[in-house]
Image 1 (cartoon, protein in one colour):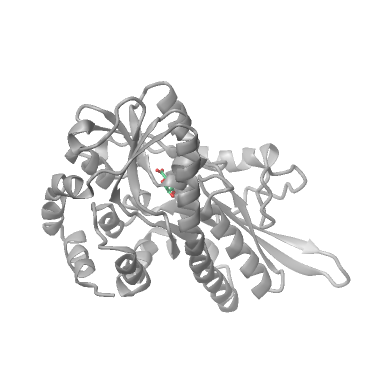
Image 2: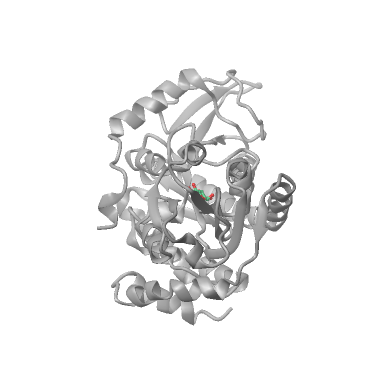
Length: 363
Ligand code: GCU
């Protein structure tokens, strides 16, 4: 079984203790876009959020919302979260503050979701692929060549299907707030350039903790190795895997291009990122605060999307300048190789109908 070959889960107690340890190790990148966190702010990190008392004449409560994720602080996805924090602070007159912890400081994506579930963390941003383990609806995004183009993808995500999928993990103490653009995923390899799917044969390729990603890599004829994003650089360096796949900004900002010299833009999947909030935390907010948070998230999604194209072009230019060979293969050959995954999806009671409805969307 695909799922059983994924890494075992760490006990929640270990994750919560990591949060506790974090309070003496590092502090968040707050909404001010600081690159390296200072040790100035060491609030009680054992809580998903904290209430601080601020002076300035009268006293008022400030609710601090902790949001952790795995990407670099220069990443357009991180900048989206910073923007969300700014909008929330403005809407709430400074009474709600988002502190963003980037770069996997509080754990891998799956660990962060588990913390959100138990209320140890208020919010996180993860790839939709990792949410598959929490709500099967997210699997649909793991289907190859799902969207015809950008307009199709946007119509799906911003329409009823997107909202329905976002709401699907509600019973798991997780509430989806919005999608962020995460572009398309393509292969990068250490030693062998990928021009056609045959070039992947026998290679060990890192996958996210996602049964769909696992199935996709196997359909391409490679062997799939699940590794968390934070551990991937070392895994590539040490030859645990021969390659991986991701969008250009992540390939660049995680510095995987230092190890992988070939990047083949076959764009097999377009998996969005998702901002989620703990339902424990959500229900501690007043209806007004919930509305502000949802609006700030929605506005940040629009803003974040405006950053994507330039960030992608910049990433490709930088890695190419650094000596990476960029390959632009015929995507149709890759799509044909993994088309059977769509046939299998048709038989699935959850993603079968979703896949069909997505195909029927006409922007
Ligand atoms: C993308 C995505 C991340 C994810 C990463 C991965 O970069 O934005 O959320 O962690 O892929 O491959 O794990």
